[in-house]
Image (tube, rainbow, N blue to C red; front, side, top):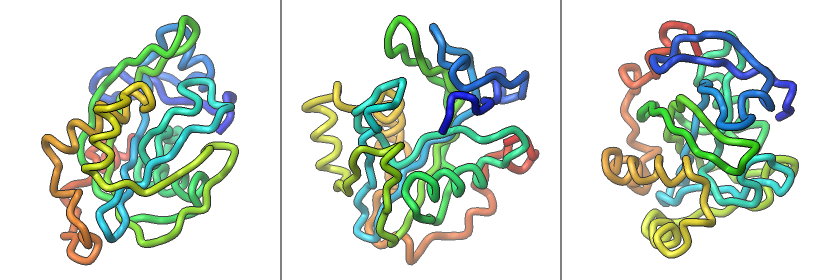
Length: 200
C-alpha cells in the first residue's frame, strides 16, 4: 500500500465524513478512519500470523494477525478483505464477521493508529505466498502457544492484535475449533451491517 492512498474518515458510528491521504490519517495522534482486521485459521485450527515489513511506518517488525488494512471509498468491507488478502498473502479464505470496535494506539511522537475496525475470522487450506513489500515473515501458530507468547513478550506484537485476540478468546472462542472449515454455517446474518448498507 502507498501513502497516497485515500483513507475513509468516519465518526464513532462509522458514518463517512471525508477522505484523506493515508500518511495524513496517521500523523500525530491520528484521525479516526475505517479499517479491517482479519484472523485466518488453517484446518488444524492454527492462526496465520505475520511479521510486518521493516519499511512499515508504524510498528515495523512487529508480529500481527493475518491481514490488516483499509477499504477504498465505495468498496464493501468483505471485498476489501478479499483484495488485500490476495495482495499480501496470495490466498483466499472463507470469511465471517465477528465484531467492530474503536481503538487508538500511539507509536511515536509522529504517528499513531486511530481506527474503527471491523474484525473478521477466515478459514483457508491454501499455502500463503507473502508479498515481501508488506510481510517480513509468516507462520502458523496454535492458539495456546500464541497466547503464551503474548503473555511472555507482549512488546513483540501490534497493539490492535493484542486487543482483538483478547476479545476473540473471551467472546468468540468458537473460531478456534480445528476443521471448522468443513462445518461452517451460513453467515448471511453475520455480515458487517455497513456492508449491507453499502458504506464499506
